Image 1 (tube, rainbow, N blue to C red):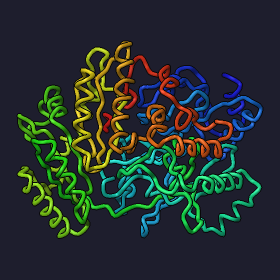
Image 2 (cartoon, rainbow, N blue to C red; image 1 turned 90 degrees about the horizontal axis):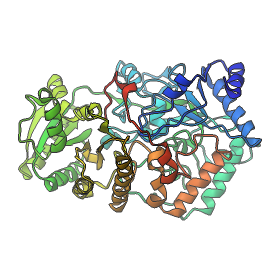
Image 3 (cartoon, rainbow, N blue to C red; image 1 turned 90 degrees about the vertical axis):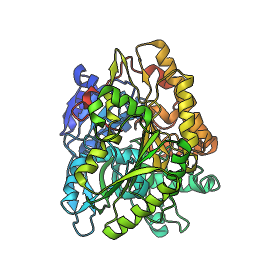
Length: 545
């Protein structure tokens, strides 16, 4: 066991592991990258985290940097849950609901709690957290906060960050703080603190003042954007500040979340599902645009294209039996309404049917919960792509998190098809049509040099196309090692420079998950690309996207 592991073993309550087998397991997440950690730590409490951060800070002061990577269940497609130093694994111990107010729906949780288990507990009180990711059954709430995750319900309810009221965070030096909106008067008190927290507030206050013109407004105009750091929602015009938006979506690069206070929404299991069958991409784009203008937003507008349906039919014909018949439509839209008032649900369904009639698009309307579950198989069939293997060729998650303005949906979809055709790749597309966020994974063999080069070529073409359409490189999965290289082009050097300064303020020695948000280039991540990609560690759950 190395010296770092021995030191930690003596000073923390949690388990410390350094054997090659465990380190190898935690050298990968759901991304295409691999980084071998030196130590794996299962913290038992906040004090373990605080001591570890303090230890790494003191070593860094003497010139030896040992990174800390916070990890939930390792479902990150961007490569943010792997690191070369200490990988801190939360689900083993820090996995509890600490408090639940059944009247207000407010809930306090530890970061390692399974998202699905939290939802089950909330359902018993008639509540839930709407922006759950597709991976909720096998991912953690801490990971969802760190990525500012979103999902099928996010067209109506937004991203995870909108449900985080406050956080408890261990800073890079081991100091513990609570975040939340504080008044200008309280900010002035923070500015006077002789602590690292006080130093952070003073540095941020100066940074926001010096770059006021740059930080006035987020230049990316899309329904959801998790790229970079959220510097726009920290300080308001009244002088109040809240550090919470910075930690949400920061992927453990600014601090280590140990507790989260969340708000929830009333849960209605009785929804209405409208399934629309579109034979024209332009029409589909116009329908999505019209749906977004409805007075009450659908709770979901999901889609699959005919390429995915043809793939599913070729692999498992029984899956779509009694649901769809060939020839398949160009696009299938699944439009859901979840208003608590049954009459209001019916009214919105009628408005949706009028939109579809205007474009002469056929549809089915379903209220029966069991039949709805069958119809949702159309969308969830994308999971078959993850399990598909032809020799060493597999679906590779390198271009699956772009998002564009909804009015450019048709252009986005056509550009995706062009990129795949140009690179001689088969294409299958699904995703959150209502938000302009598509999911797609090319089939590649990473053991082949040509396919490894093609992966980066397709990434460059795809993310530059998304940026050119006024979109964001990350709509819900965040940057990680995969998309961080595109942040300078996405935001421009001025805003990217502010991101770099924010990182330096919170993490002056670079101990918190380096190589994930800023200072990342395509050249720096290329050597980390795996020779063989696998999601076998998640096989119990059949991963979804």
